[in-house]
Length: 158
Image 1 (tube, rainbow, N blue to C red):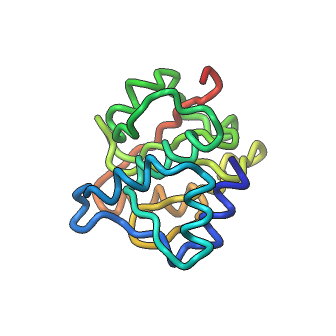
Image 2: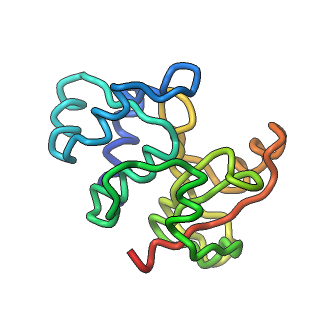
Image 3: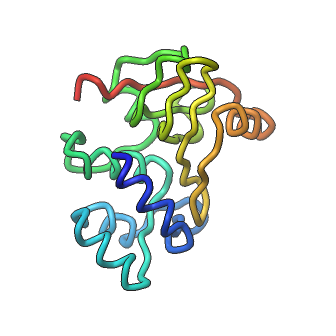
C-alpha cells in the first residue's frame, strides 16, 4: 500500500478530481485499471481521475484487499467496513479516515501511523492533486468547512 500511495504522491500533478464532484466515465475507467496500467499511464504523462472514496478503495484494490467490483462511496465504505473506531493512536497504514457526521463528507487513508501522539500522516485526494497532511490539520480544515468528527475504518478483516 505504501508503494501505491508514494507513487500517487510522486505523480500528484496528474491526479484529477471529478468536475463539480460528479463522477464521470473517466473515473470508472481509471478505477478499473490495473496497478500496472495506472503506473504506465502516469509514467507517460497521462492522468488518473477519481474522488476521495474512489482513490481510497483503489489503493486497497491495488494491495489486493478490496473485494468488491466497484469503488463504492464514503457512505457505503462505512457499511462495507463495519469496524469503526476513533482512537487515532491505533490507526495503521491503510486505515480509512472518514471526516464528518452521518455518511461522511471526506475520506482519506493513513500513510504513516503515529502511535505516540495519535496524529498520523494521511494521504488525501479531495481536489485535483494530492495532499499528504497530518490528521489534526485535515480535521481542522473539515471542521471549519462544517464537517466535524473523525472516524477510522479498520481494514484488518479484509
